Image (cartoon, rainbow, N blue to C red; front, side, top):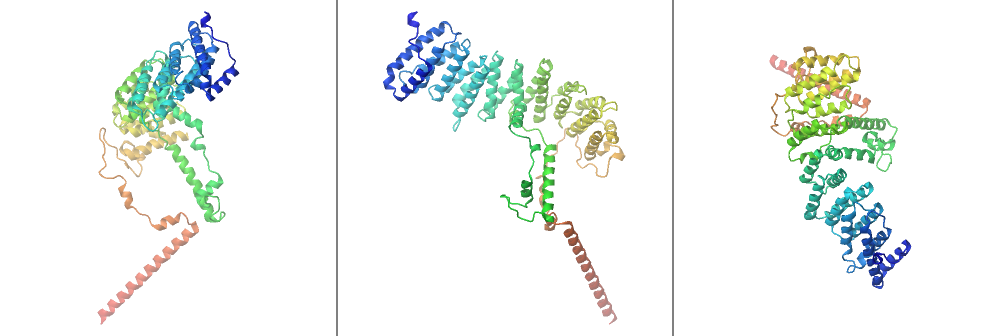
Length: 547
């Protein structure tokens, strides 16, 4: 037992002074190094007898040896591997502070290239099972930065393959915390454009069917881009809140240059008109960006190996799921997104969503959005027609609130925009009659539905509702597809505008009126001269006939 006792203890200040002296003159302190190495072996033997107890002596000597390892490559050649083996064997039962200190020492040795990336990453993957959230976050951040550093400049396929195989196996681990942390590492590496291949995406897709609810939610959020949207909101203000001050508006109008110096008289009539036009253009662009905002296209959905099988399998999991309703909504959203991206036919999805279409249902607006998003031109109208009927019976009735009726009409319009054959003429005519409703929101929704079918198929409307301009975009029969015979928009190149039209925007109303009057006067003068010439020619002809 006496042989297992460590030598004389040293204070923390003495250890730091010894560390600095050994770095300055390694040869002079070789004997002290060997003494500390024996101290390390003795402390490690004591630790193995009681691994769960705190051991500050072992922590102190390991920290010292880790700092001076580059100075003694021959004497401490086996020390890094001994440290890795110690953590691999005892990290589940090790004291929290000791485990954190040893992990930091391993990080230090890896940063100095004294340990390989594969051995350190495999060790940290195993330590994801530890019940220490801060430690797991630090280890995951190091793995991401280390893998990114390895693939900087030149891709290391061999190392990537080893790490990917180990990480992908860890996703099937029974420990949900370890699986979730491994999945977060894979997702971060994908977002940092390190692992962006199809294999990585399909492995993340397999995590959508995990037993653990947290793992499924993480994978679903990755495909839906929820994390990216939240990060964008936290990083800065939204675009709708961005406004231009008076100085920037003057520059946008062209009244001031980039340095703020005036290029025209700021209080003149023309300058004030340019400022008003710039303000109006800014307001219209904001409205256009807000109304025409479409869901972003995610490249990860395009890399799915079997989108049809993935959607059907995820729908089967959704039917049997006992998760929280928020997780079920994520599944519905992802199935709808995959169907819309690949134009899939998952006919059982629409009846499943249909049973949630109740005004009292929580998050009903999101469910209606998922249903409309999953509709495309290849879905049979017979499958969508019950969904339209459910909306008409549960939402668009006189007994409902005005907001509920407006939501139902807008959902019907979105569905019919994607599949015009999904509604019958009688039901369409009944819904259009809400254009005379007392509520303004309901009136706008009904008129938008009316305007849609005026352009698609006005024959489905009553004669009084068809309007003057009909069938601008003639709807096609189900299953047909229109192919362009040439370059779309080529005829626009043939349309040229006069130079005078471009000058109209910069002219005042008075100048435009004066210009129009001049044109009328010129036309009248030309007409008068033409009439005089015709009369003179007629008189000359009569004189010739008389002669």
